[in-house]
Image: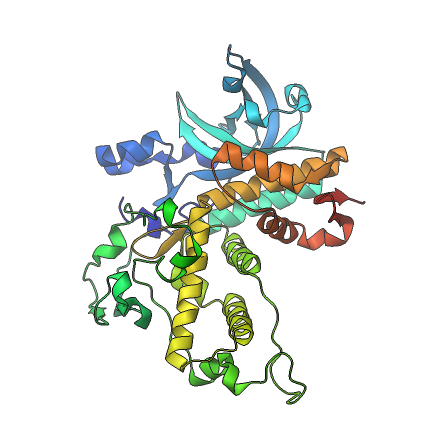
Length: 421
């Protein structure tokens, strides 16, 4: 079970038929009592793939309302059926914070639900997002197609394969005494040899919340990261001494430098994770993404130009490492991601935020409302104990509505989105 986080779909939202969820084995049925805790939390197995978060679509057959003196504890249980087989119905628990007026009148309506599976008397989905849908044959066909694609992905049982000739390099700036680093080490693991860092994923990197200041930019990382070395040409492209300043009118063939803010860099990293369905991702993959790498270069180039500074290729590369880890630190402090000592990034909270934004955007379209970014950010952050700025939230919204951006209008003065169709 300590290797489950290395599964390709660990933590991802999987589109499934209800019958696949109902028939799936619980962890303790396969691995016994050592997985008792995860099994109680609702983790289930399909062909040895550990899964928990799902998306289903079906018709509401019945609903049950539970009310308490403390209204914040109220909830509704929807019994939905997707007609995928004999046992194709499942309960969906909707907490009070997700209630809306039409919810209590949704019997017979089609709904799309995302949430996490839990085990009470039977398997049940605790709802993260819920959308009421109109009768749409094409949408139903698309959903079934996604379900069959998921079946194809899970058809081959998952087994862990240990890394071969894995090289871990400590970046040069880690030798700084302030970081407690030593000489650079290169460790090569032979095939079949166990890497302790790969299995110790429970120890999440801890960061002191009191150290969130500008002075911490150089000392926010305390684990090893694998980064590809830059070519000489890439490093030279960062040096102000090899290119004219932004005020120069000569050398028209010099590369264009774009003004990139830290918010844009943070948003770019989040969008990279969203494109991967918030699956566990290594820091190396994020750093080596061409779009992120280019924006890191542009941001660093502007900083060096403003300061009229220069440095050796090694110093410039160190600054790029530090900038990347500073951004990683910021996202951890926002509680949108966590990183482990094995350099894996988990983004469960980011996935929940994306689902909530997507659900509210759908409600804005259907009911002709306005999406006030600051209000949504304040309420959502208070309820979920995260910290995300309006700029970053706007970047996520832009990515979600990318295919129909021409149908939306953004009011900069009110900081809200309006659907124009």
